[in-house]
Length: 116
Image 1 (cartoon, rainbow, N blue to C red):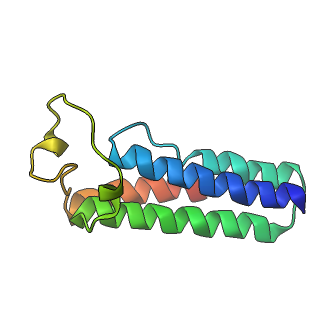
Image 2 (tube, one colour):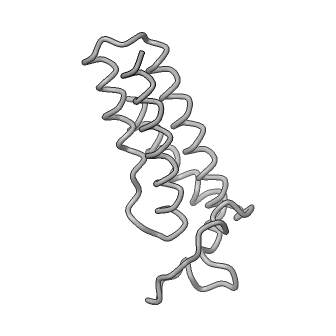
């Protein structure tokens, strides 16, 4: 039970870190949740742990993709500190929205890589 609880805590920590990294245009860390899924299998934990990690990560990827597409305000919780010229910063409130097609084209491979 303790290992299962630690997996849930680590999953939430990875997803919060990924939210910060997405907002500041850093290296994304959500893929570490795949390693946590491997730990579920290696430690022979109940399958519900895998389902919970899958659902949490999938919901986060969908939320992140919607924020990338329309900029509804999630990333505003984290200040942007980068100064170099990046196209996603050429708007009044960076990072700029990507649009639905661009965001979807990024989401599909992410979900495929995670679930497969």
